[in-house]
Length: 87
Image (cartoon, rainbow, N blue to C red):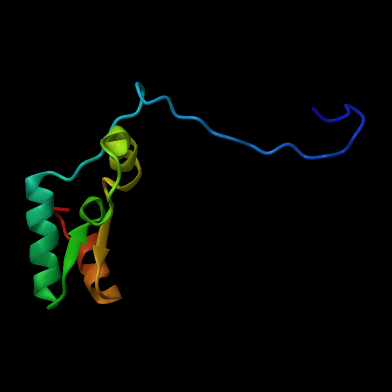
């Protein structure tokens, strides 16, 4: 522990209890909408969850962090997916 008189800044840390997090996984309708939006501009997109490999004990954390994220091959595809009404 540091000296109380020192002026060192403490690091800020955030903890999210696994029992409290709510995962955000895209619905089949959102997946279909994202794929059709990407196809409309001749691009490709996948849910970020398909690109992340982790031990099963961390699945809930990864779903919390990346569940609502899509990976797109171009910025035009990303814009089409982002602003598609079904996504």
